[in-house]
Amino acid sequence: MSPPILYYIHDPMCSWCYAFRENWQYLTQHFEGKVEFVRLLGGLAADSDAPMDSKTRRMVQQSWRRIEESLPDTHFNFDFWEQNQPRRSTYPACRAVIAARHMADQSYDLKMSYAIQDAYYRQAKNPSDIDVLCSIAEALNLDRDQFYSLLTADSTEQQLQQEIAQARSLGVDSYPSLVLQINEQTRWPIAINYQDVSEVIETIEMCLE
Image 1 (cartoon, rainbow, N blue to C red):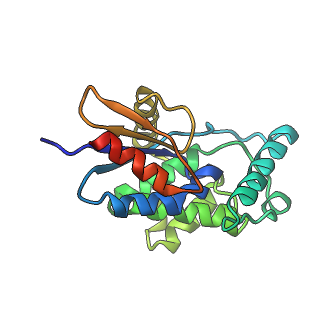
Image 2: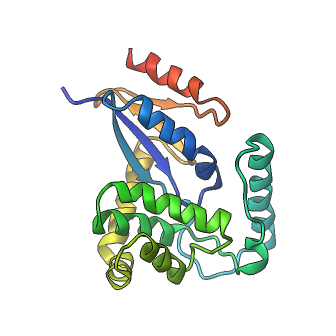
């Protein structure tokens, strides 16, 4: 019998995913050997060259401030808003995660996701830009030219659309989300508590029992 699957649906440019990343690491350590972990890209915002409008800029900045207020150990570099031309476009960053995992191994799903978050939220860089993503890949010791080719390949876009469709089939439309699949017929959405991961663990353990 195959083990239960814990799906984690995320977007590397989702601020709440950034806020949850230490808890995700704790979950994988706690349930190692008990469940299979599957990370899926949800695709928060499709490709766009249009500058982010003022309403969306305010909405995103307010989200960053809410996270800092509720999770004091999580910090954002607000210089991003002065140093960049923000766009509501996260698909390039999602494709970067797929490209990295194909070039190296599955661990690069996590490595690229975290490197994108660090560049965006801590270093005030814009991961909607291809050049930024290529530089991040280079810093992870991935070949820049090969990464660019894979990042822009049709097969990478197809993989992203497959993962988005799979996330929708799990009933997910917000990020981050957790879904525990016990078997083909039994799936449990797991409520996320950003401040107390023990509550998330308790819920998963109850479902496994």
